[in-house]
Picture 1 (cartoon, helix red, strand yellow):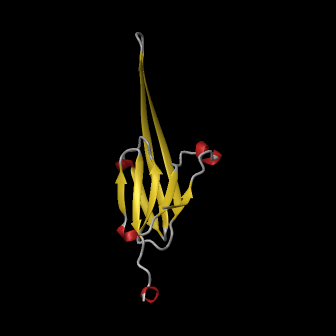
Picture 2 (cartoon, rainbow, N blue to C red):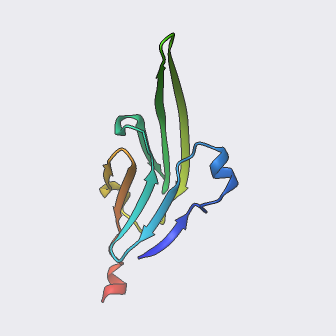
Picture 3 (cartoon, rainbow, N blue to C red):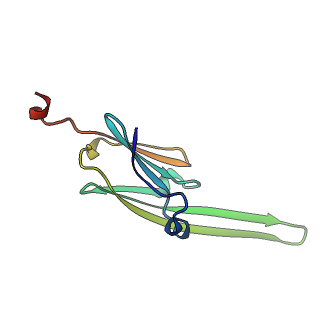
Length: 120
């Protein structure tokens, strides 16, 4: 498995923005895009593909609640994110499969078959 593209773990721009960390992995017959989306429900993630450009956007909602003897406090935080990622052109974007478990979004694209002239 080859890592085609990945966020640098100490990337200042990534830490300053709310764009999710992303990796693109290439295996023999598939390309897998892994996106870290902790605390984001699958229904709040939009996936769009146009001209081999993957655009992910969504909203992370967090509620903090604190109680003590004299008062109760509730704080809501909404964080919008969007990220565009160029995809390799040797994949079949119409046959993608998607899995989201609340922490990790996984998009799997099969690679296209080689041209008949290359196979023969």
